[in-house]
Image (tube, rainbow, N blue to C red; front, side, top):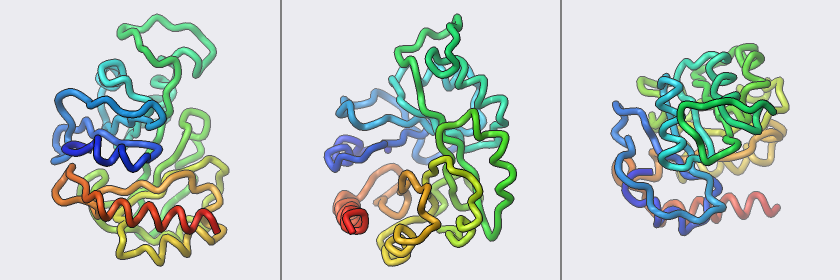
Length: 219
């Protein structure tokens, strides 16, 4: 989100993402509008310093962080442990945080195949995985990976499905949601295929896609 988060929020998504990676054309600056409390605000970061992430969480009262770079498991563990309630320990923090718990979403890029063994060290330090298409930029590349790869998913950790999802592949989404591959699919992450320009979402396309998902999930 960058230009019209309030319009998108009116569609009642579970999450709204705000990118804090400066090279991105969708990088978010300025003040965050008032959003309904049931929508979780996600900060998207790429290999950011830990203190930078903590400061953004504090400033924007984020509910989740999505790590889209090469952050190692130790980074995720350190981030998790900086929040009281995640580790059961009281920590003195340089930036006192409003949140006493925050969701950690670790993104992984997939092209033709994927070595799922790389997920194992992240199992205990992340709340969710996110599977995206491998491209020149971390996220927002506009094309999908082969979801058949996910039939080999070895974990029970819920994941976000991302990467070039749009109205043009709604048949594929419907088939995926009815297949065993989607057993641990927790959320559908959409972005560039629903934009008029980077950060400006097409509301009518979002409405159409939401109706599709609601129809499939009600079956």
